[in-house]
Amino acid sequence: MDIEKHLNVLNKKEQSSILKLVDKKLTKISEAGLFYPGLQTYADLHHYKELTPFIKKLKNYIPGKFTVTKCWGNHTDGGYTNWHLHRSDLSIVYYLKNKEAIGTIFRINDKIVSVEGPENSLIIFKSELHSVPLRKRGTPKINRYSLALEVSLKT
Image 1 (cartoon, rainbow, N blue to C red):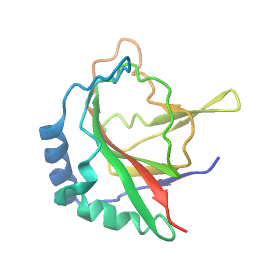
Image 2 (image 1 turned 180 degrees about the horizontal axis):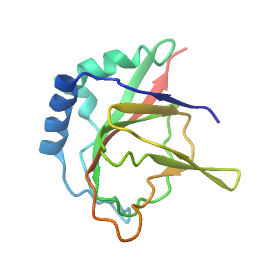
Image 3 (image 1 turned 60 degrees about the vertical axis):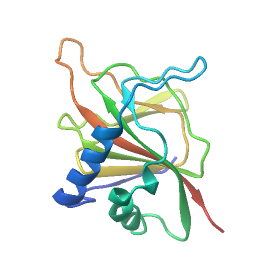
């Protein structure tokens, strides 16, 4: 499995603009028997002007033509996130606010692979089983804001 990691993706103004949007749109989402931890936005953030600079910069990291089909914001406090995967060609996680650098974990061939997530970095991966690691027992709650994107590649 290929996981690409990129650092220093946005400038402070772009980050701040996206964080304000995400913070304003966060809500508790639940759907027929599905558990969504923490708070999330609906998956339409890619239609907001605040995301335009970010989506344009993705062209530096994704070769060829692509379409962002879904984009949503997440806020977690370090609690449990279910293992899941996305139904897309590529998945992206952008670590918007994440002082603890809690990244993403993957389950590959019965092994757990951990990728750190410093603020203002992103990872791109083919849809693989993944989750957010728990904060260490006994540590205070955290503020981890991220964007998740599903991307369709055009041929």
